Image (cartoon, rainbow, N blue to C red; front, side):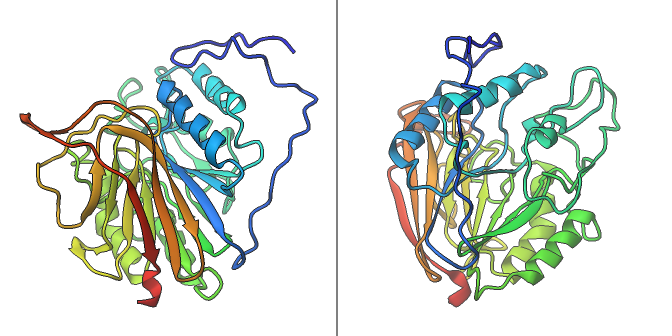
Length: 361
């Protein structure tokens, strides 16, 4: 079948043969709503770097026959103005075959905006290369600023991307999963907000007792980076009250190249019925975030900016779930504190926990 020719850095797949065009692929459909155990793998900011390969290989070798679906919490291919990198990103998943038979669900990150150097299209590859359980066809606009000016690390709010792969929901076993776009409008009256309100109203906790929410930009952040993102403030102002009202169980985020898990928390206060927020952002791109301060906030259970990895969520029954943070590599041997180069803190340890469904508390 020949070898591949594309090799833009960082992922060089030219030494691998093209997949056999006659290969018969197979997949498992999702568990019927309300039935069966469900195991989800959660990866954030994966990219196509050496540690990305490490993460996928570890997941493939250790859990491929156990997991039912993969969640990517945004920042997928890191194309960096080179569209060929979307092709090599898909090559990566051919070379570490998981998604040919395991469903994968995605949420857009800031690097998935992917505005070309010349032109104002946004989210184009993210929309056309994947097909999520869409509400309706995408309404995809363009960036209305200067052609050459869009800082992917600090994008403006909001951007014009509705429906399609931007935000959607589905039932999977005992979970009702909702995916949001941090970069579309979150304001009351916006299409995303009004859809979310309707979706939350429709959740039947007798059928799907676990309510999971995934989007890129976290509203709880113990790290120094991304403390002033407009999307974070909008999420906190408009979406967190809905999370609390409708008793969302777990929120998955990326964006920070690090790991963080909170206690159940609502509007900044630790409370047994609040959502648990998990940042899973060290899937491959980096693991290098410094803490904002040396002492963790009251709502922190675990934080680390040195270890690469992914998470596993097992829904056991309607009241209990198990969470595991799986280490796959490391960037350094200690955690750093912003503006305090002389302070070094130990690396994060194991993080395994059983969750009790807050809806029943």
